[in-house]
Image (cartoon, rainbow over all chains, first blue to last red; front, side):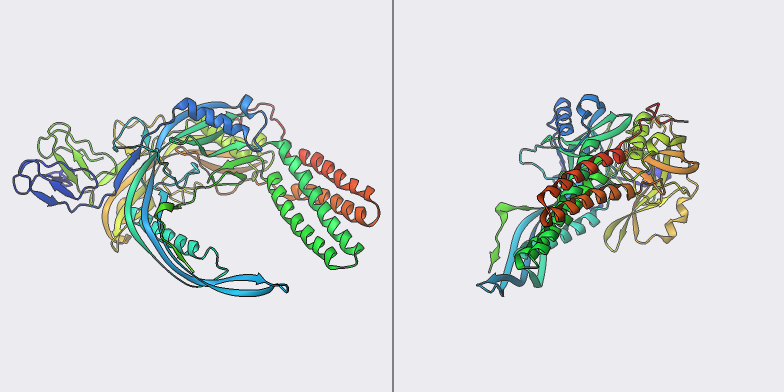
Amino acid sequence: MTEAQKILVSMTCPSCGGQVQCEEGEDLVLCKFCESVFALTTDEGANKVMYKMTVDKDKALAKVRDWWKTGPKAQDLVQTAQVTEAYPMYLPFWRLIARGKACVCGIEEERRGKDNQKVEIPREALINREYIYSEIACETGDLGIQSIVIPERAQAISYDDQEIVTFGVTSSRDNAYEAGGRAIRQTAVEDGGARMDKIYFSKSFFFPKAFTLVYYPFWIVRYSYEGRTYFATVDGITARVVSGRAPGNAGSQSTAAGIGGALSGGLAGFGIGLAIVTEGTDVGIGVLVVGIVAAVALLGYFYNRFRYGDEILEGAVNGKGLKSGRTQKKVQPIYNETYDYFK
Amino acid sequence: MPDFQCPKCGASLQVKPGTQMATCSFCGTVTYIDRRSALFFYLLPFSIDENAAKGIFKRWTAGPAQAKDLESSANITKFAKEFFPVFRFRRTVNGKETVFVKPAKGTLLPGMQDLTIPPGNIVIYDANASTKGADVIQPDIAIDSYLPELTGTPIDQALVYFPIYEIAYTYKGAAYQAVVDGSSGAVYTTSSPTRSSGAYIAVMGLAFTLGLLGGILGIMVSPIFFVLVIAGFFAGKLLAARVVERQKPADAEVKAE
């Protein structure tokens, strides 16, 4: 027997010797000849689900072109950008559905009456919700995708190697399961303590319901602008632009610098001037405080748009640039499966 | 990649990456693959071609963190398309599946120390696998040097080749390196010419100062001074445009070799 043959284990029915058929992930097998049932003790496989791509190439490209028009992106992007390639792909995600339960005790602070006295109200929350956790099962690289929400209209198809490129799983299944359980428990505690100002006690549990490996379709679109290569990914079912990179708009950057600087300076100056003119009355100080706070916030917001506006980052893309859009959260509640108790 | 034969009929058996079961395409026999002691060879194909990789590098040089003239002044001195080898061990440690990735080749290339296998379509590396003209870097570290130190019991182990573009470039007389992941397009660098925030802070500082003076004087002396706030906006916008403006390089392409 050669080295290679040693690692193949023949699968025949132990009672009748006939061939048995089994699929990855199954742990019980029925022999079709003698109808005996036996258990497989192999490495545990997770169930695989694949969702059907329903967005075609034209639609994906149209969505990317719409996306080019939004936000402070280069003005001539729609006219000059050239799509260099667009291809579909399946990305793997670990998906854990579990009931998260948490008991959270704390206090809510409220100001009451004329003299604004602080009152502490004891609160108790028992959270009993179903949550879905999903996390990409390979490195994110420069895809900018961490998690997914599977839309209701998504159509599950059987997993097989088809013509569409399917990215391989490189992360550990058990690590993903643990991370998912932790994230669900943490979310349950956060949901319980949402109204509380201080949490004194919390205890959480999770009860797993399903753990699957989901393959979800995306379009990846690469385009060039001024000789540089940028990209965008489009959800293969909802057609939303999930992540991407785009060149920024120099005009918006300089406008941000002007508005941010002058406006925040003006607000701060207005506050200081008023405080001096009113000789330190409550109103003057109040305007000063509000003015300074607003000035700092404006300065920070516009400085970011000015300094990092050369490149727009959509979704969970890494690196320096102006973040835009939202990053998909890893934990999502299932609202119709909620049995909470608040006191 | 070991050659497999169906234990029932002897026909050659196709074993897909990451699966534990293989079905013989001739006799239909399902075979369980015990991967504990075998070393499998996998490859992540390039999904980014040379032009796109150069474009990605150019995009990176134009990013807000990089020196302002890096895009026009960076001079690429080396541009190599390569497959980089790592060992991937899947093992059961304390009842948990754990993945270890170890280098199969000593290197100082940026990003290769993180040892993550980029996202991609993992295929079997055998005589049929196309490397599309890329150099396959041969491992110089044997798998045996890792096996004794790894904890737990093996599930499988593989030598995975992943696609990279190795780029060396010079900027103002200094040499730098960058790696573009040939599968997802991530850019890895250790050190690179960066851009100072000084000019940005100075411009906004000036606009702020004008606005501040306008605000104070407008309240205390005469509303006419509120004009300074508007002046601050225009001064800020004009100067900022100078800071943000890029020199268009004479030839738009980053020179390659």
